[in-house]
Amino acid sequence: MITKKKTEAYALGQHISMSAHKARRVIDQIRGRSYEETLMILELMPYRACYSIFKLVYSAAANASYTLDSDETNLIISKAEINEGTAVKKLKPRARGRSFPIKRPTCHITIAVKDISLDEYED
Image (cartoon, rainbow, N blue to C red; front, side, top):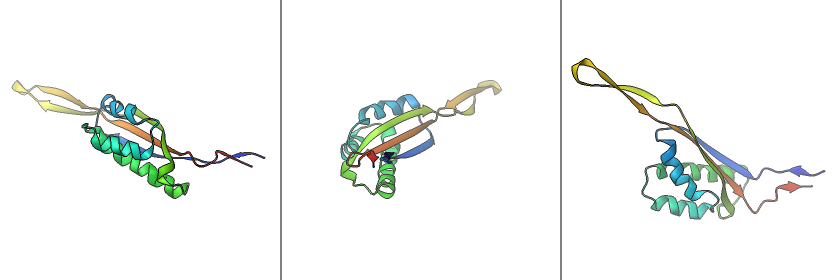
C-alpha cells in the first residue's frame, strides 16, 4: 500500500501590522525559490515587510529541520500567501472637538517550505 509522506513544514504569522498589499510585493519575489536564495533576497530588499517575512521563513526552516529532519540546502518555498487581517481602528482628535478615524491594517502570512530530497510517497 502506498502512503503519502509529509514533506512540508510551515510557519504562520498572524496580526502583523502592515498592509497585505505591501507584504504581497515582497512575497511575490520569493515564492518558489530556494531557502538560501530567499534569505539573501530578503536581507537586501529595502521594504519594512522583509523583516517579518524573514523571521517566518527562518521559523519555517527550523520547523522543517525539526519535524522532517531535513537539511536547509534542500528546502524550497512551496507556498507563500498573505491574507488580510482585522483593521485596528483608532480615533485621532481634530480641531473643534471632532475626531478623525484611523485604520491600521493587519495581515496574516503563511510560509510553507518543502524538502525536495524527500520522496512524497512510500511503500
